Length: 131
Image (cartoon, rainbow, N blue to C red; front, side):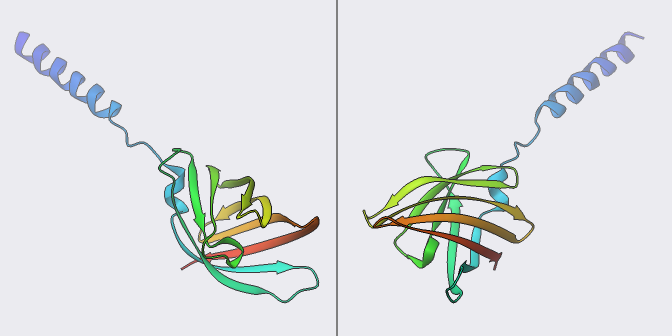
């Protein structure tokens, strides 16, 4: 009987330890990659380019978007929460400011952004497809 209780105790401890070792879910994993982006602004032709999204090393909830607005040198940060992404107000080379938000659905990422340059405001949508 003592041997049986010892075996059950060991099994119980093993189950508790194994259940405590759950893998941490990182929402950013679903965003990482290269996307074909189609930027649309009312009254203008569609503008196609690629963006790349990587994990930020500065904040565990942020991603870094490179190439947004067709600017290869542009690198911006954006916090992720589940399927939602937020681009806080940022400035690129003192040329323009921008902010936006969006949602991810599978391989699709749809962004809306506002760009301000020399007092002129542009509202764009950017439809992205993961390559």
